Length: 374
Ligand code: SF4
Image: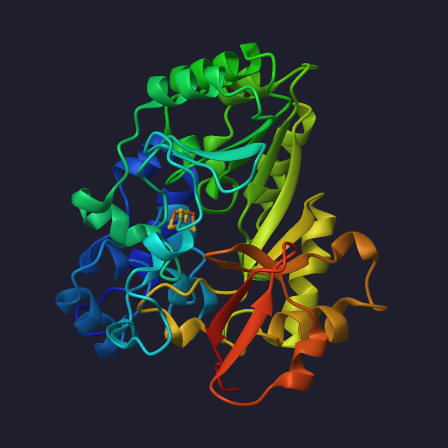
């Protein structure tokens, strides 16, 4: 039992019961974003309490996701993705200017449009998330309004209408599914009316952290045969995140004619061991989600404690998946850099020496990244 007596069986049972019965809007009205609320679900450690009290950071999650936390294990993979850590004070490998660095090659566009490739863009439509992932740089954009892009959706739509070279739009944020149904309906309809747009992708973590969001109302907006298909990318990083409500949410999305893939992030101590990694990919297939990408942890500041050596993800795909699980479950492993996403192969290990490594993209441009020790 912790010092407040929370995290003990009775309040936890009540918290779990209440989390299970809430709609998506109720879940968002009762975020688990204070120590007091967190301690209804778990026994916090002194380190977690100090980090919450002292770090200037946005944090929090939904009651659904908090209910998946192990109440007594500080190494629980859900806890580590949600609760601030004192390790965030350290920054040896992250770039303080990560966002500017990674967007260096992007063309000048409205602030809500990021264009790093000739025919596809990211369209930022929301600055909120249901759960603020500790390994994601976006949580700090939410904290610093000065660095947050202006999300003028109509301006973005206007720009997209004028740019006939764009075929593929990734709707992102924050989390686009935190918009209300009418806003999502408007966006999807307006994008589908643009003749040169042939593909809409949506990046959302809601089926994982807020599966209640996949409501009949949202399904009605997404459903049906259309000229422009919708592909949804989730982010599920650990098999413990895969629950019955998530499986149901995915099924509901698929039943609308939407395709669903996963973009996991490789996280030290969370999914970087062969057994967990294989189990994650196996279970994703059982709930009909195709593993699409495995991302190396961004070179953003304050997340060194999640970093593995760069080649680790390729080694995991080779050693834990290839030959042991269908090719359907084998993601592309990439790192995001200032010259775009670069695929990493397991053979990178052969050149593992020194304090940095140089990677080359498909156009022959190179980037030098720090070498992370085992
Ligand atoms: S990973 Fe997605 S859901 Fe998590 S904080 Fe970043 S933008 Fe939000």
